[in-house]
Image (cartoon, rainbow, N blue to C red):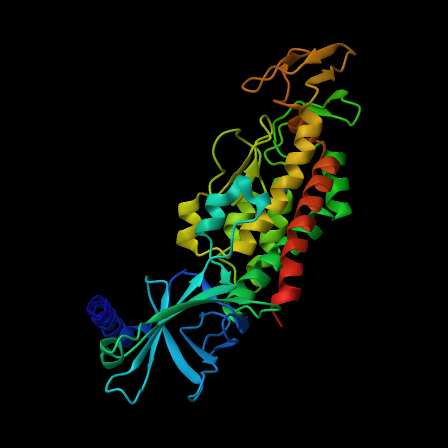
Length: 382
Ligand SMILES: [Zn+2]
C-alpha cells in the first residue's frame, strides 16, 4: 500500500518539476479557473488570485486552510497549462516538501442546457468546486500515512477573475449596442418608407400578426434592414474600443436567417426560420475561442427568444395570400407561390420581412441576452 503511494508521489513530482518553470510565463489555456472566495469542505479553504488582469487570466492562486496541531496551510499554486491543475509545494520537517495539486471542476450542467450541453461543457467556466490533493513526503508515506484528496465547494458568493469579467463586459456592451441599434425608430421608419425587407433583401412578401401576407412593391434592394443595422453598429464600433474579436462575427450574426442549414459565416448562433432549431457555434469553436460559459448561456437565451416566436408563427402553417386565399406553407425547402412569385419559406421568415417586426424580435433577443450577462456580472464582478 505504502509502496504504491510512494510511486504515485514520485510520478507527480516529476510532472510538476517539469512544468512549473514554464507555468508562470504562460497563460493556462481555457481550463476552468478556480473562483476567488471561501470554500466549504472538511475545513474552510480560502482561495485568492495572485495575478491576472483584464486581458490575462490568473496563473497563480493562494490557498489557505487551517491545519490541526500545526501551522495553517498557506501555499501558492501555479497553473499547469493543458493540465487543468494548479500545483505548489510547502516545506516540511520530513525531508521533502508537501505537494498540493488543486483541480477546479466545471460546474454541473443545468437542466435547461439540453440544447447546448456540448458547448457548455467546452466553454470556459469559473469553477465553484475544487478538489485538493495533498501529497505527503516519502518519509510519512513510508510509515503508513497516506496522501489525501478533499473536495471544497463555494458556499456563497464568488468573485470571478477580471479577465473573464472583462470578456463578459465586452459581450454585454455588444448586446446593448445591438439592442439599441434595433430600437432606432428612425432607421425602422426609413426602411419601412423605402420598402426595405427585414432580413432578406429580395423577399416579395411579408406577413402580419393575423397571418395575412402582403406584397412588397417590387424593388431591387441590395441590402436588408438587418444589414443596415449591422452597418450602423460596425461603423460606430469601428472607431471605438477593441474591435476585431467579437465585432466582425456578431456583425455577421446580426444578418441571421438566410439559409436554413449551416451557421452564417462568422455567426455565433442562429435560428432556422423553417425548423425553428437553434444552431450555436460548434463545441470545438467554443473550446478554441475560450468562450466563457455564461456567454454561451446568454447566446442561447437570445436564440430561445427567436425560437419561441418562430414556433408561434410557423404553427399552424397556414396564411392568407394577398388575394385572400388560404394557403398552407409547404414544409420547409421551397416556399409556395403567391401571385406568381415565390413566397417566403415560413411564417416566421415572412413575418420577419417587416422591419418593424424584425426590430422588435431582435431588440427582445438582445435584451434577453444582455440580462443574462448583466445578472452574472452583478453577482460575480466588481
Ligand atoms: Zn438575433
